[in-house]
Image 1 (cartoon, rainbow, N blue to C red):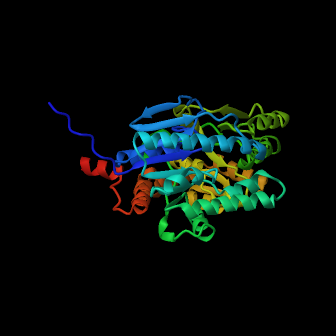
Image 2 (image 1 turned 120 degrees about the vertical axis):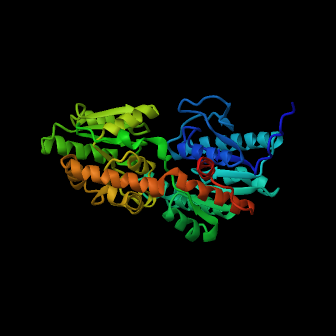
Image 3 (image 1 turned 90 degrees about the vertical axis):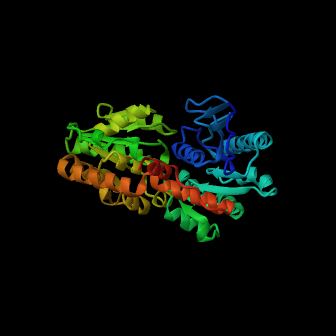
Length: 414
C-alpha cells in the first residue's frame, strides 16, 4: 500500500523571537499553530529559558530552534552584549533552515527592532518579511529611564523605521500601534493588519468563573518597573491600614526583574500577611487563582507606552469573566470597556476605592464580569484574530487568504 505524498506547504515560514522562548510566548505560539493548521510549514527561532532548554524540538508539527543567551540583559550595556549574540544565532539557524527545507517568509517579533538585520540577506533573494509589532521600543526605552535619553531614543526610532521600511506587511496588536506603523513607520494602511492577543474561547470555561466569597484581589503578569506594582502595594496599604480592611488579600502572579524589590517593599510596609507573591505558576494554577479572585487589577503606571499598548492580562481577565480595576488609558479602556472601573491616572487613592467598590458590591462585580466575557467571546478571543493573521500572510505573499483553522473546524462539524 503506497502512502499519499505529503502536501506541499502554502509557504515555508521562519518566526524570529528574541525576548521569550516558545511555546512560553503564548501569542507567538498561537500564531505558529494557526499558520501550521492553515497549511504553512512553520519554524520558530527563539532563546532558551523559562524551562524550555532544548536546542531543538518538533512540537505539534512546528519546528522550534533555540539558542542560548549569555545573560538576560536589564540595561543598555547588557543589551550591547545580548543582541549581537541573538542576531548571529538567529541568522545561523535561519541559514540552517534555508538549506534544510527552504524559506519563503521571515516573520520577526520585536523587541528588539533589530531583527530586520537577520531578514535582510533573505530579502535580496525575494523572500517576504513580516514585522509583528509587539512593543513600541522608543516608548519602552522612555519608560525604563527617569531622564530623557535623546540619542538612544533617536536610535530606537531609526531602527523601528528601518524595520517598517523593509516590511512587506506589518502586524499591529491594536489600532494605536497601527497608527504608529502608518504615521511613524510610513507603512501603507492596507499593509498593516491588527491582530490582537487573546486566548481561545475554550481557554477557560465560563462555569469555572463563579465569584468567590473570599475577598481576593488578583494580578498576573511581568513584574518590572513600568508595571506599577509598587502603586498596587501602596493601594493595598491604604485599604488594609487606613480603611482597616483586614478581610482583603492580594495574590500577585508572575516574575520579573522587580520582584525581589517588590517583596522587600511589601515586607517593609507590613503587608506580608496580606500580599502573596507566587512566582510563575502552571496554567491550571493560574486559572484557579484568578478564578478565586473577586477583582483583577492592572496597575500599569500611566505612560505613553502603557496608554498605547494592549496588555494581554486584560483580555485574560475578561476571559475569566472577572471585573477589572485599572488606571485610565486609551487601549485599556478600548479592550475592557464596561468590564472595568477606571481610576484617575496615577491616583492611588482612587485605585484603592475602585477595588473596594467592587469587593463590596458582588452584583456589580458579577455584571461587569459577564460583560467582559461577552466582549471576549464576540470580539477579542483568538478565533476572531486568525482570519486577520492569515489575511496578512496572503497580502505579503500576493495570494488569496487561506481559511482560518477555526472556520474549517466549524464547517466540518456543522
